[in-house]
Amino acid sequence: MARFRDWTNPNYTTLAPSVKRRVAVEQKIARYAVKHLIEAGFALSVFDGEEVTVKRSTDVVAICNAMATTDEDYLWVHRAGEKQRCGWLFFVYGNDGYDVISDYTTNLDPQMESINKYSESFA
Image (cartoon, rainbow, N blue to C red):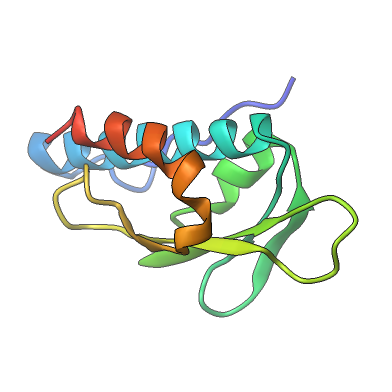
């Protein structure tokens, strides 16, 4: 079984404890968002600002492991059978943690309600 990549290890072993906590919060929120969107029937792609590293996947581990390799990611949201993406979430890493989802398309408001509540629980 595939394992989640720990965003704080091994490259970040010298980080201050507060930074490790922030990164852990970012990772929890990203995992929650990915799981929630897949459970809602969407497939997801990860665009890291340079390339699409995961395309139209429902593999939670593969998607999460592709995230946070750069300072920001777009999580593109796709409906089954449609060629164009139907929405996106924009992740920016390195701020306060709970605010890792910087922006998203408003058509995802029904899915984002739960995700936003989860994120705010870390504020």
